[in-house]
Structure formats: C-alpha cells, structure tokens
Length: 96
Image (cartoon, rainbow, N blue to C red; front, side, top):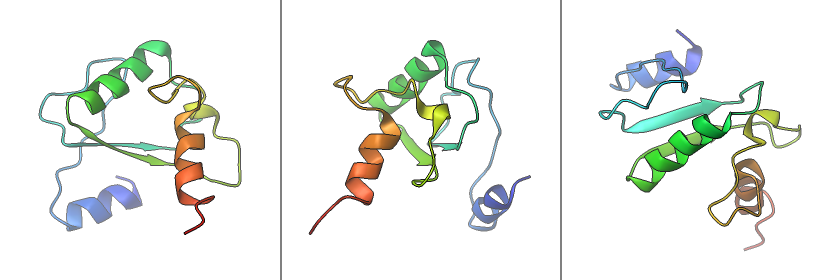
C-alpha cells in the first residue's frame, strides 16, 4: 500500500485500488488520481467525468512545476482546458 493509502486508512477510510479500464465501483466516495504517467484514455476520462457528474468526489494529485501528461485528455466540462490546468489556475494563480 502507498504512503497516501496508509494515511487514508489510518484516518478510517477503506482504500481500494481500481483500474479505470473497468467501471468505477458504485460504492466509491472519493476517486484519487495520483500523477498518472500515461494520458488517460477517452473511456477512462469519460468514467471520471461521469463519476463527478453523479456526485462523486475526485482528488487530482499533480506536480504544478512539471508537465502532467497523465491528465492530457481530461478536458474541463467546457472542453477548453485540461483538468490540471484548471486546478493550477485556481490554486496557484489565484490573486485574492
């Protein structure tokens, strides 16, 4: 189990590793994607967006200083910006 998985388990969460080649299990409450090394396929991306649109929660972990090729196909709902760029804009470029 990864260090993050152990942290979640210690906080009382049940951690399962899934493959996005299959549908996301219905009892999933939070989907955590940690710096994928290959772009998600169209099908995998559709599964993530469907999970979100059905009320699921997603935690995207990425390095804001590096290219995040794993999220290359994850366009924002409007289709104009990648998910990591959208998050980067909200988290790192925000001027209060």
